[in-house]
Image: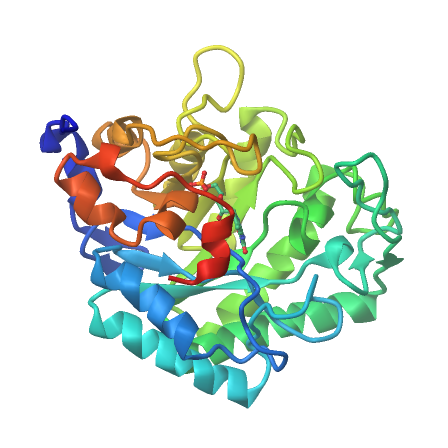
Length: 366
Ligand SMILES: Cc1cc2nc3c(=O)[nH]c(=O)nc-3n(C[C@H](O)[C@H](O)[C@H](O)COP(=O)(O)O)c2cc1C
């Protein structure tokens, strides 16, 4: 017999949310997670619709799709990631959206270009991404102005297609060392033109992409932006060295047309900076005034890609972030892969019954 926790500790997760153009029945979002289950034409199939619908039916308020490629040129880092650049892909996504809507959840599409991690990599500068084994990925081609316009337009076209497919919003993937983040970071951006050098210059291209996406979807359509300190090639990376730099960034996003921030941290409750500091998500919210999603290590014992054994932990500290008004939504990643019924178990205080995450669950597509 396992002891249940008092359900009132988790009540903040289940408060309705209205803001950023979204109306959600609760504060739980499914974090975007790549599974590489699409066929070769990158058209999402029924199994993908069923996978998201299952999480929706069990109570997730907002589904954020797996990263979805915006072109077939330099965006993909692998085969079998779904796309949003052909009519057939757009049609396929309509079925996913309808399934999630039938289950009373909202769904936004994450738009993804992998930049220097791509199979045919392009990046602000010809600097290869380090690999975790000490080696390097292939050296990317430094982007010309023509490349930058093309990628910008592909983000905008993907956003327009997502809107046409019925998505409730789009999330621009600006995190984890991929193309937009690689412009922001001085380790990957060593350009000498107006897109490199100062932080203001390094922000310029990501903001141009935001503006193009906003123009493509029009006013009033939810645009989310995901960013991070960490990069897939460096978990200790620091793009925002202090709260002032973070403030410049999140206010620029707000002014350029972003409605909601999705601040990707590896531990949602960790302070952003040394000393007494709110979380990176909490600080981003208070500096920008934008509704904000926090994520990382909710109900799992390790950060992403850390350690072999993942135990189940109490999600109450994440609920407290909402209770304290620090963030608006909490995104759950790995634990929602292993537990489509996460919301039901946690709402009842039965988090100890959650199934520990294993990488193998990803392949099972349940
Ligand atoms: C298998 C897997 C795939 C992921 N794919 C993406 C992705 O496509 N886009 C993205 O922004 N983050 C991606 N992430 C990061 C997650 O969205 C999330 O931020 C991270 O797993 C931390 O949350 P968790 O500790 O609850 O798992 C992925 C994580 C995992 C485990």
